[in-house]
Image 1 (cartoon, rainbow, N blue to C red):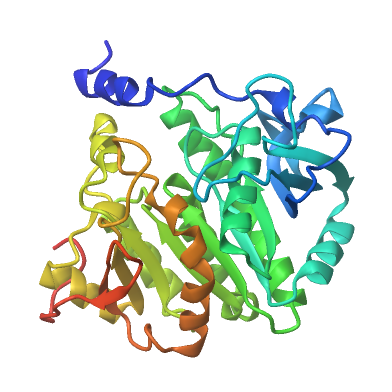
Image 2 (image 1 turned 135 degrees about the horizontal axis):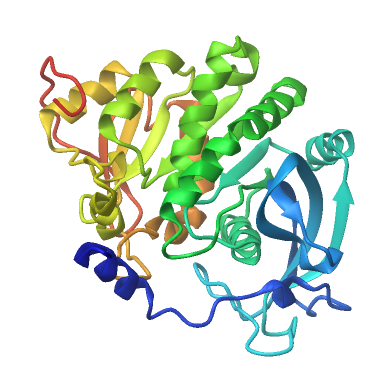
Length: 363
């Protein structure tokens, strides 16, 4: 029997328009005049589609696949939005794929490093994403952030179903080895340039499990190049504490964006979950102390506008702030010390009032 809370969760998402299918990423003849293009590199544990133009499916692949997409951004693009085709794709008004090239792993690493002026940014999407959604979301964030880092999408085989939460948890577990190999390869060949890994929601759990696995495997050199940002991570607080204990302190503080009013994380209780890291209250002295002890920067982004009633996608609106965030992580200006901060509605980082006590996260 379906629980009432599960029905509420489905109803909250049901107002979305029809989801994009593979036709939205079929390559078109040309990009729009006066628009821009983004080169998006893709590493995925999704299976390849039978028709190459369809990209990748929701099925699990026995080995990772690699590709490069040129995505055309229309001149009328609004920051934070994806201009989806409403029929036949028109590059003048819609996001569009201009080209799609399959790569082997060696060529993929070479192409990424060649394209990375100031490093690499890896986006790991969350629950309930199909491949076109993941690809165009990566392109939207790259376009809005105007980054000089090479944008890489790591796309795991989400079932792209509202009722696929349990299946998606299994798929992120399935994808840990592939993400660890990707981050190790990028970190060890970056020439000292940073590799930023950004995990949203369930993708945050995948990132943390991958970092834990890399530490256990002795991949310390690759870990030293990583800058880690988690947005609304769907992680049990006790599990997070155990993950941090194994990972240890990162050279650059890990940044975790939270919103206590995140309804999607609140609804994780449908599966009997405990409090999620992405919904922590940074005014809690125990949370502040744990952040400092573990070299974690907690940023409350509740003041940022969300595009849905679930308040789970505020990170989308912050894409234009990512370059500043990255610079300050590297320069140590705002984030010299771990702790708790508040992001204002104007994008300014404000220090939260801190009262440190000797306590552990979630206790």
